[in-house]
Every structure is written in C-alpha cells, then in structure tokens.
Image 1 (cartoon, helix red, strand yellow):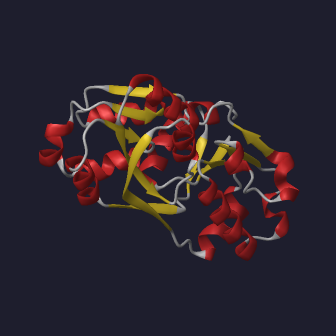
Image 2 (cartoon, rainbow, N blue to C red):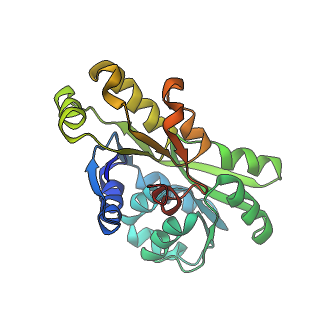
Length: 235
C-alpha cells in the first residue's frame, strides 16, 4: 500500500522505515518543521524541581544539544506520553521514566497517582491542551515552558500535483489536527476536487479526524489509541 506521511522530516523518516518493514511504500511530505529552543528548556529545568512532563519527542530533541546542563537533571522523574516518547527520554539519559497511555488525560492521571508537588511541562506550540485541562481538573500544579514550535512547511504546487497525479497514495497519515488542517487547505488550492477520491485518511485521534472535510469523513479511520503503532495497524 502506498502511504503518504505528513510528519516532520525526522519523525517522518522513522515512520517511513516502519512502513517499509510492514511491506508498504511510504511517500514523505513533511508539512511542518520544528524550531527548538533548548535554552528555554534548560531555564525551565534550572528554576524548578520535581517531575518533568514530556508529550513529544521534539522536547527531547530540544534538550539533546544541552547535554552538559542536562546532566544534573537526569535523575528527576519524567512522565511521557506513550512508549516511543518515553524511550526517547531514556536515550538521552533520563533514568526514571514513566510512560502513560497515549493521551493527555491518561498522562495527567498517571502523574496524580505517582507524583506530588509541582511538575514542569516542557511543551510545544501549537498544542492540544488536553493534558493541561485534565491536570487543572484534578488539581495538579504545573509550570509550562515552551521549548519548541512547529512551523508550517511551504510545499511547491508542482510537488502536490506530482504526488496526487502520478504517485496516488492509498492512505494518508495524520498525527496532529494542525497538520490535517494545513493539508486540506493546501489541497483545496492545488488539487482537483476528485484528486482524493478512493484514498483513506488515517487519524491519530478523534480531534485530528475532525479536521477532515465533511464530504471525506466516510473515508476516515481513527486509531484506537493515540500512538503510532495503533495508527499503523489501520493499514
């Protein structure tokens, strides 16, 4: 199956490798790129104590270039969304990492069960506020520090036309609502209305799926858990 991957380049390449191992043919079309602010992350670490919350591997990449400053914080408890993000945290040296299920709600509840006091949330922008909302509801005290932002990637119209006229993906993967919104806005401008006919739109969550236009909702499938393994199982 030919699968269009809309993730940022670094994450997209890892997803593409997993797709090849599953016997699929990936097409990379990164629709956003991260801009990291490791200095902000380090300042957040230096001015707080206790647990650290991580909901994206982009946070790990922001920290990875500051290994010297990071060293004294590697024994702090880390709470991560999903096994993949947790493994990334271990890779750069964190020693006390807990992986929750793949949602912000589950992450907040895991922290409430296992940690007290304040926690530092190393976040990105834009982001879903699921974790923050649930944290407030159950009385968690969080300090939010933004250490990366996702910027939209400009895609040449010719690139879109080549993909949808000559490569024709069978399925498109959407990992974030923002990416899905950007994708359909671009498609509307550069691809004919029937250019998406017969394709499947595989979405990480219900929120992501809501960004798919109403006429295409019949071709949407939603992962049972908001994690990559569950999303790829839809293929």
